[in-house]
Image (cartoon, helix red, strand yellow):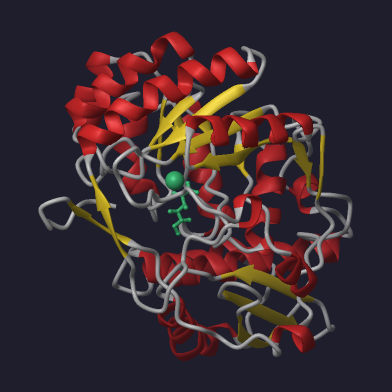
Length: 403
Ligand code: CS2
Ligand code: MG
């Protein structure tokens, strides 16, 4: 058996913070798992180092399911983002090891390719609809088949997801949370004209997406969905906080615009009512925050029964290790929908050399055995952890608002 003899956590910040678990076996084989939880990185580092790693030593790395069950059922404190991210890192690293030992790219072990590549969407953002559409044209010229549109809201000083840095922007941008001002009324007025102009300029052969970042009430989301119907968006993402799944019933009653949710979910239990009641069309859970490849496959299998497809979160805080996991997963499942792809910086790509590549609007995981991602530990050590937070949101009267 490939006996686990060591495991350790590497924290590095090549432009943003990443937490990576490296599990090593007696025969020298090692696997990598992403353990990055944006803004709470060190909590997962401690969970792994202090509470999980000691339990791994001496185990058979091939027993992926048993180790998953041991960490989930055995913890007593089930679920939660910190626990599930830690379990995810172990799970990813073990799949990496198993596929390396099999001499296969992971997607082959997961059942083989169901498609030629994984369709991705890029982020076009700009201060004005014109700027956003110009960015979208750039993505289209690069071959993207799906593009997310986010524009500045007239009358608001800043809008989350809109940045000067374009392709490489980093949302966690300050060592204490920046406070942004939000107005639902101003926002709701700005999105339909953006989509109208975008269809006019970009045509109908490209999928257009939009992220609401949980900021609307269900009835407001229903109205926006209805207003956007003529422009046929691919999806509306995180329309309202999903803590209460029943909210989505109200949205569904008012619009046929497809709905996506789940980037903050950490287990199948968060997704279950939304999937079973067919209240959503795309489930955005990730390998890193929802218990690894093992648990993500379980969520996707449930979703497939109800015609819900996947649309995994893929912002910059999901490391290249997680991106690779999503690509092997996405290539191998029947109900893949789309994969988010926010490009990492050159510094990040240098710390995590990888086999995946982009062509014709799709990513392909490549043919390297395992996940196909490595970690340059020497280079990683040159980028020490730097505390960084996402901004928060207040209404114009100062009330704290939803993410
Ligand atoms: C966004 C992210 O990419 C997305 O869909 O919602 O910017 C998200 O806010 C961050 O990744 C949070 O960590
Ligand atoms: Mg999002």
